[in-house]
Image (cartoon, rainbow over all chains, first blue to last red; front, side):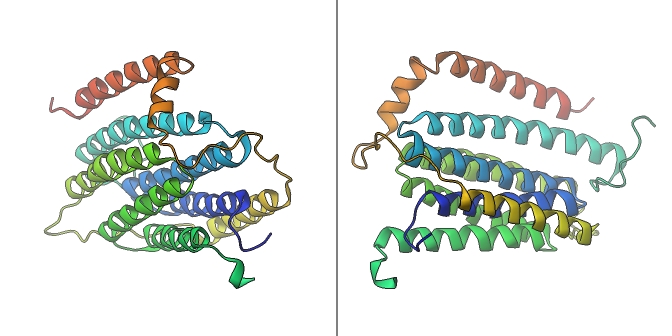
Length: 104
Length: 169
């Protein structure tokens, strides 16, 4: 692998971004921080889609897939924030390790 | 080797540096607000990478939806779920040692795989000169029509669902 940018550079960048997002999801206690980790993971997947679309497939199918990923990420963020707000009203905390009961 | 680097390579490395560094701030910062603002730079860096990958429409979409929508939502979530006056907006980390071991193994495996695989080169190259917006528009109403319609239904359901969940009883 040379220093000139090729497909592998994008893939390794997105692998690093994915790992950072996963670390955030595993270690943070705040539910909103977990959401941010998920956004990092989705962005890493999107970089892969677009990089393959340019370097391997040679068409725009990968870009289409990542547009749908962005759409679903927007839905996910809205729903997840609504759930987090409800959890905060119910438990007065958003730390995921303290929210252990399904009913009062 | 360094003399062979083109301008595109330098742009890639600077955007990659922005993305990785700000993602590190997002993950390792103790203050949630710092994390949320570092996420802004991550999204901007990823949008820059999209431009470099000749996906201009996707870069604009990234800026509009991620920076304009999701990031604002997350900031609202931070503001609404933290008692700003009394409780500090800090968030500590748990189980850091097992997490770092697992993530390090996973990252090593992924990078090794990405590096060692012989990826098929493109048969047809996307032209770097034309905008992808018109092609994406055509693809939306031909090949991708069904996913497009389903996505509109999903967005409607998510809109109604979020309002139903979050409204006051």
